[in-house]
Image (cartoon, rainbow, N blue to C red):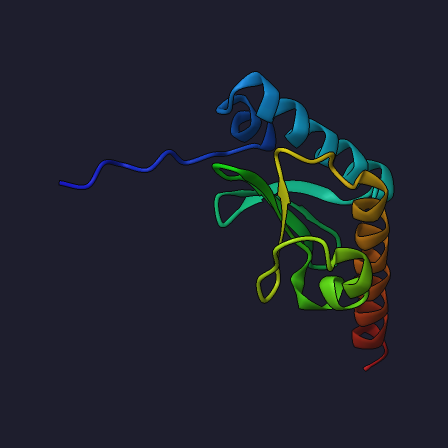
Length: 127
């Protein structure tokens, strides 16, 4: 039988499930996102920490060797030159544990995603 997967209900609960060194990195990412988008709602989506305002802004998650950051493809495209140092997927980037977190870059990506979501919401409101 398959083991039941842990279901997280809060970002605090998610972060607490990791070793102290990983918790520090996750808390640093969380703090930068909160500072860049203070009105965004914290939630768990796809069993990952998520920040949302007028739709999902970004997700992040701890993996075996990296922090995964998920700003959607648009968030990656806008910063493709700065993100070229990191492994990427369609809507994700990997920040390896053996390198410092690019917190300033994360802040800029979150702010760009926030602007994008607010513009989309404004356009919808005009219809």
